[in-house]
Image 1 (cartoon, rainbow over the protein chains, first blue to last red):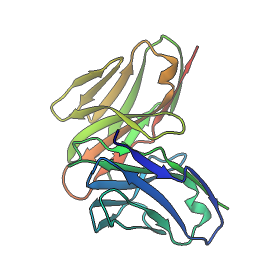
Image 2 (cartoon, one colour):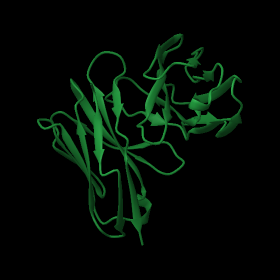
Image 3 (cartoon, one colour):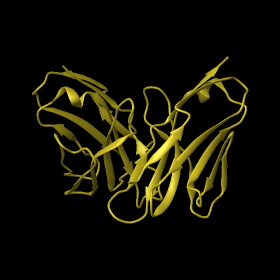
Image 4 (cartoon, rainbow over the protein chains, first blue to last red):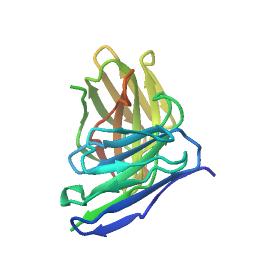
Length: 113
Length: 113
């Protein structure tokens, strides 16, 4: 069955380290998204991509980057992790336009010490 | 500013009882509204989508309503089950422009036996 996966599911790192969170989907969706979810906030968009070589900044993109070298993967990189980036990160993919459902991965819980 | 407000923030009901969750939004121009269910430790899953012309839509024991004039939506859960314990997130899509989803903070629902 087609699916969307994230790895690792849990990560503990230290301030200043570079961290990469993986996202892989097998639906062949062009559109992929990264969100963070924190207590007291709704899901907030970090970066998104509409296809290979396309990346766009979302609402809370500072300190994060993404790259899209193929349809299946959208890795999220924290260039220099900060304690404020402790959060749960969700990757999502979607076919076509926003009338279609976004399918979310299981999430990655990141702790920055 | 595009916003989605959900109420109540949290709710505890007994198994078998009904409940209604509310969502008010200021997103414009409106494209569609989705209700997502998010189980603890998992990604959100879509329950239903409402477009501008739809007033009511059911998915099993879940019934969503939309009043596009007052910019309000509700999610009614009938004969609640323990498996309904989750966060319910209202997500409104803005028509046109860059990817324009606005997420509510969610209602945390607990079903007690």
